Length: 83
Image (cartoon, rainbow, N blue to C red; front, side, top):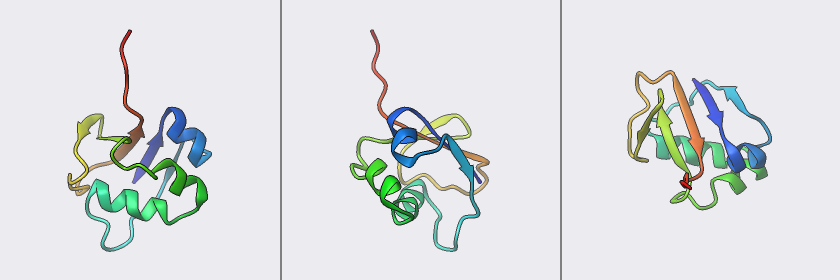
């Protein structure tokens, strides 16, 4: 699965994106965030406040309990503001 990181999420993770093979048991966006958070300090820092980071599956904004099945890309980004 392709994972893309934007803004300060990218800065904390230390890369713009990556391709990963999801382990068994990672079925939702929330599961993915938990798995990523365990991969190292940068990931843990990026996802420390899970209520702040937003996700999109194949360019559609989704809630954390959304299933990953069938998705090709997950994007993580902070909330956006207008102005």
